[in-house]
Length: 137
Length: 193
Image (cartoon, rainbow over all chains, first blue to last red; front, side, top):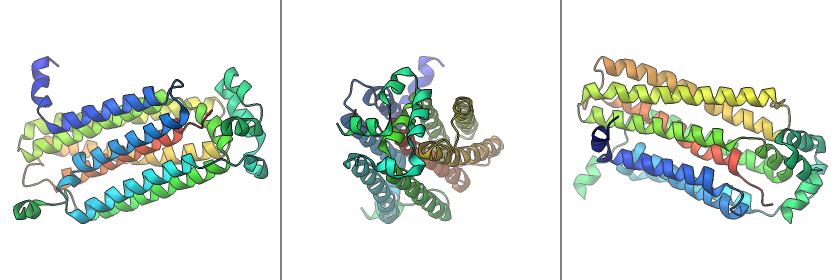
């Protein structure tokens, strides 16, 4: 498509919303989640960006910004609750040893998963307890 | 202010919003179940997460966002009575839906080849259940987009006849919205190292 064909599209709000959504996705997938960014900071950033993206979809693409107040608040409340629960659950302290107490979460499962993740991960995940201690540390 | 209040309306069929609300609550419960189980086995879930390729999830997000944009553009064109401009946008959205489905099938094939199944562990059970449930929504939505595309080619949508197109659009945006949260939940929820 030539640049002149794109020009009318740039005047439409939906195009700008789409561009912001695409940029936010690139930042969170190939920026915040990279190893150079601390895990907690990066992950919280990823979910705050995700919440921002969902709100853009709700208000602009689903046109809730023009909707009566009650349905708009209901969907915005859904987003607030989901985001808050994800962040609180993620930031909760971890209890070491929990996985050993549950037979469904056996050590071989962790090692099996790590084996498929390549030699670096396999070395890191000697046992479930090791990983848990590593994570808490 | 009064005029603005009078103009406020929900696009599409009202009953559809109830269905969408219920669907979103069900997904929220599934998200919370995932988080609850992850809290009891962070190491297992982290090891499982590291076996996923975030490039698949990221590209799939870009595909779904682009399809949502196409649907939004089609709706605007119907509102403006630019009937001939509607079908190409719906076609774009439809092919994005196909691309997402194809990408997901390739991802599943890779996982099954590597020996990962829903029975592998709790992480993989959640991974397959959540993504397959979402994929069913994508497949249903892609079929719906094909129908809307066909209808648009016969001039079925215009400014006084928007409900069907708007309802399909709202459903498709919800499918997009759920993936925006599901993707980081499964692929990007990094345990601190």
